[in-house]
Image (cartoon, rainbow, N blue to C red):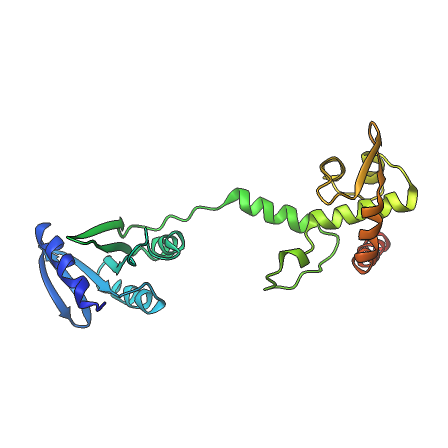
Length: 235
C-alpha cells in the first residue's frame, strides 16, 4: 500500500464536511481549510515515530492536526491502539483509521485533537509506593524480563516469615509482625501462594518441607534481608 491510497478517501470525507482540500502543501500531506479553520492530516502506511515527529511539527502551524493510518487487513485495529491513543492524546493530536473493505473504504475518527488534561493514576502510584516500602532490600535488575527471577516485596516478606518459623518453630502472625514481619503477614500465611506454610491450630503456623526447601534456594536473599534489618537496627 502507498500513502497516496489514503489520500482519496480522506479528501472526499473532508470535502463533504465543507472543507476546501489541498494536498502536498509545504510538506503537509493534506490541508483542509474552512474560513479561518485549518486542518492538517499526515499520512503513513503504518503508525511510527516518524509520523509522530511530523504531527508534532505540524502543531506549530495549527492546533487541528490528525494522523491517518490504515487498519491491516483482517485486523480489528492497528497494533497497540490503546498506547497509540494515549500518546496522541498527550500530544493533542487526532487519530483517523482507514479501513479498506471489499467494496468500500470506511474512516474511523478515533480521537480529535484536544487539550491534554493530565490525570494521575492514584491507585497505581500508591501500589508502587507500597511495593517499595514493603521491600527489605533490592534484588531486582532494571530491564529484567523473567518474572520468576524478580523478588517482590510480597516474596521478601514471605521468605522472612519462613525464616522466622524455621528459627523459632510455630508462630502466630502477630508474633511474626513483632519480629519484623510486614503488614501482610496474615495474608501471606493464610493465602500461602508459595505453598510454604501449614496452619497447625487456629492462629498458629508452621513451616513445611517446601518452605524449608525455599530457605535453601533463597538463602543468599535471606542473608541480605537479615543484613539490611541488622543495619537498620544499628542505625
